[in-house]
Length: 339
Ligand code: NAD
Ligand code: TYD
Image (cartoon, rainbow, N blue to C red; front, side):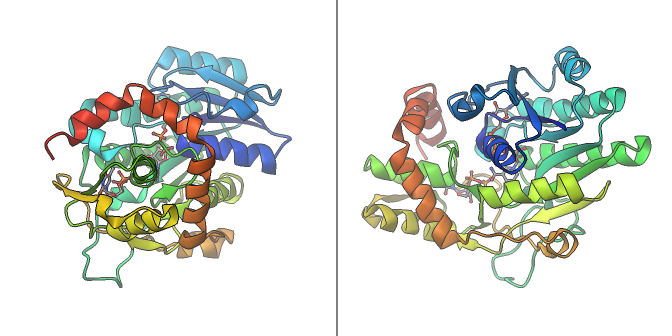
């Protein structure tokens, strides 16, 4: 079978391609990626020469390019990872998020209708549910939790989710949708909390913790997310939403302290900076449905996963040092100056 993976040069998409090549070597994979600041062909180097893999540079919001690719390849399955994914950037430039996350998704859905697919899978986020209060540890997001977004990023992802479900109901398109909690692991772009803190701590630079560092995220090792998507794609039910998460809640401060401990660096590197506007307090997934219906459960807990992640960043310095040496420098100045 033939899989079209969009956004496969980014963090989770690339991990998913590696996972699929290992688990289903008989499947052919085509990766469509615009190579924005977050897309990196160095990441895909291990599969670039693989005859079962093809990389195509292109924008999911470019209708002509998307249709031309479908015309040529006729994929059986489409998994859409392509997105603008960073909340802080969405506060700077909301429009770009609507263009890629909403319009891009709509164009992919149109292409699936026009050319026909066995399934379209939308990779979404728990951020569409908004946030939970810090003093109610008994509350979790289920698939029935109302959509209630906080940032332009989560609003754009929610809009895309609704379109995906509308294409199922109105046009009968075979779709599935997953909403996952925060991922971490190899090839995570160093603007996000965990790789940002690892790379800065290694350089003995200050670690910018927003507000008091009390916000809680539910961390999932990226390979567990890939395994869940693979299961949904092959065994899920059309029109269904699946939450993905592994009950690994940590405050941001606890995560940063764990990283410092792993690296043997002092806590004096922590600097409290101005909070993110609209900062979601707590995310926490109830993964009962995917466990019950598809038998998925995470295999890597946070303590083990963070050790592996820190080790990966220590052993793969050129990967992230190339990124830090590029336009990323301007980004850091712009985003954190005067905070
Ligand atoms: P990422 O920013 O690391 O990668 C995004 C990829 O999409 C990049 O390779 C980029 O070049 C590509 N891209 C961006 N705009 C494009 C366009 N218009 N056309 C084609 N390609 C384009 O993101 P990620 O962290 O790997 O997230 C992947 C998906 O998973 C996103 O949809 C995100 O919303 C979702 N998600 C992420 C997390 C997380 O913790 N990172 C959690 C839940 C869901
Ligand atoms: P992030 O990795 O941007 O993911 P998301 O906002 O999608 O959850 O941020 C994770 C948490 O870490 C979030 O509560 C914001 C916080 N954070 C900081 O405290 N400092 C930072 O420099 C960054 C990037 C994030």
